[in-house]
Length: 596
Image: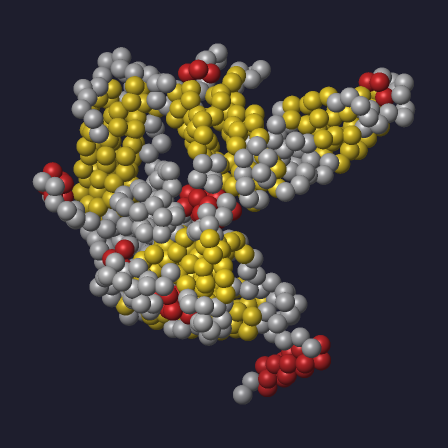
């Protein structure tokens, strides 16, 4: 027996007993079984008796298991109720689709979201959640026992969605190996939308066919109850499972781990989890991890995004790019490409690189994981050419494609458009603050250039996705420095921060997307006005400090009756410096400012 350790433990116990504080408590963590060469996402929950946030330290006893702890991630919560009769225990009335309905509580489910794996999906759900899209308007319309519960459809029948789609986002460590994984429903490749599902147990057949963007942390009992509800022949619950509220919540006690196993089965190790409340309170839990032979591969390869970057070139210039793909079981990959529309304006060729492409896990390799492509335009051609690029483990996959076999063997697909006779578009966005329920116009959302001085604003078009399932056209003007400004007009009905995507395209075909944010608030931000010592005898210099971004313009007055409009002061934590020349002769002038 270690007497020193026991004595130290008694001192720690005595300290917490005397102070009335208790150490954090980590909930039991089950032992983990991980397919060899694959990853498992595992939630960790705890209680902080002191009420302070918990920080975690995670260690593995062996290099056979790599551990990633997800930190500073957002938490998304769904509050669910079930339609019931008026006589049901705990029955009450709640809003639902413009009316009211009698329900009983089901509970809440809290998810950690993964912007590191699926940033676009997380952005879309942030905007929809902030706008109240799901609240008392959607249900879990599809429930399949021991498989998934699916919801988020504004039509409540599985046929509804947003006015836009977005691409799949796959990651080698985001697999359907766990329980309670949050993913996008889709209607095919790159058709992400507002519908989502939550898995009940491992569902490996879904790997790299659906975007994983979150993990259930609390509310597994709610998941179980919904998954066991009675359904009709279309898998719709007989009593509606209503999503009363979707919201972002603060969680300072829990975390999520991703464990990646070596590609050798039969390895074991201990994972140690330590929770610390920052005031001396600590708790430790350990669990075992074991790698097992993976018998559930669906052979589905996937294309890594953002590896094709040479999309725009002058006339008579060949564009060279690399496409990277991965199939986690190391099967050889075969590449196929097809033009989208008949054209004689290009020559496309490619070769499989001899370079070994390594995965993001361990020493898994795939010698055919990279394709080098060359797109050569016809002489003096200006315009766009687009192609489907497909990758599969099956050497004759294109035979199934051409003959119309459905479903096709496992594959991934991406469309790329190449532009010739144009120049790339680059720029930056502006974040703004607006008032809820107040229409705004002339909001500067992005500034860009195509590198051609004097190019006309009419050579470009812009669209703005405001993050609340609204898309409008942007107005483009040229500023004093020759850059192009994209202006927008909109109105938000609910407060919060909305991710906004600004898309710009030239008449020839070059395009660019910019991500900005709009903060919708319920009252005007406060302004701080400070005076600096006089720069010279002609006046005083003042700083007008804004707590956040402000759209449109700021009105400033040096007296009580007239206003001077100051424009182009849009940004975050802006300090507006101005000089009042008349202040020397008018020492009792009044200063005030008004934001839109």
